[in-house]
Length: 173
Image 1 (cartoon, rainbow, N blue to C red):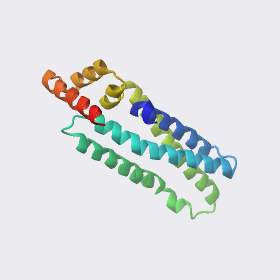
Image 2 (cartoon, rainbow, N blue to C red):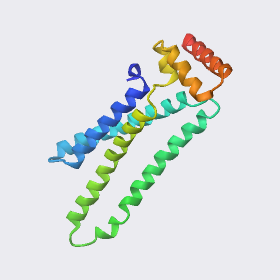
Image 3 (cartoon, one colour):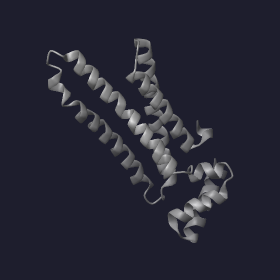
Image 4 (spheres, rainbow, N blue to C red):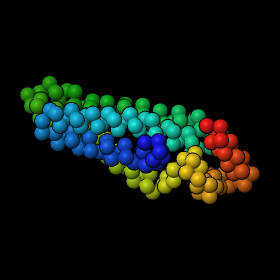
C-alpha cells in the first residue's frame, strides 16, 4: 500500500470499510457477518496507519505533532459518540421486543461507519486532492510539491527549506 501513496491508501481503506459495513448491515449468515467484521477491522487499522502519516507529512513541521494528536482525539471522540448513540437503547433492551430493538441498534451502529467513510472519501476528493509532499517527491513530482508548499506557506524561503529537507531525507533513506 505504501507504493500507492497515502491518499490512495486512505481511499482504498474507506472503500474496504464501506464494503465490510454493508456486509455487516445486510448479513444473511454468520460467515458473511464475520467476513464483513474482518473487512471493517482491516479498514479501521489501515485508516489508523495512513491518516496520521498523511497528516504528519502534509502539515507544517511546526504543528505536525499537534495535528497528529488531533487525529487521535478525533478517534477517541468517535468511540465516545458510538457509545452515546447506543446509550438510549440500553433501557429498551429490557423490554419484550428485545430482538427488534437489538436489530435496530445493530443497524444504526453498522450504518454509522458507512456514512463516515463516504464523508471521508468526499472530503478527501474535494479538499485534500494531493498526496503528501514526501510521496510526491518520491515519485519525482517536485513541481507539485512546490505548489503544495507554496499554498501552505506562501513564502519562497520556507518553501526552499522544506524542499531541501525532503531531498536530504530521501537521499538518506
